Image (tube, rainbow, N blue to C red; front, side, top):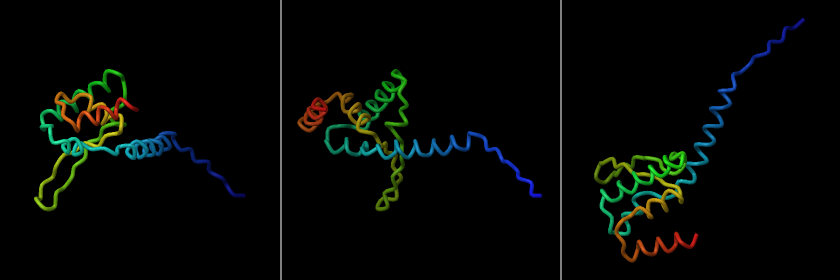
Length: 118
């Protein structure tokens, strides 16, 4: 007679699988980057970093998981041989950062108008 062994697997294994799915899901929503903010031509690095910190603080104050809207990545520039830090953002994260920008010009005004139309 054969003996059948029942193996029990802890639920955390399945939990890790769902964490992976959730991480991939939110990563696909990160379609904007800080480099796009520099395309407006009026933002210094200090202004962008300040807006990023304020945006992360907004997420913290509202108990929103900032990992769903902001993700630090590293981009290697093969021409210069330099590794740059960049941030990927969801649409909400990008819009939040645009609202934090202190200076205004025509390009920023266009972004703000698009934000108001959402």
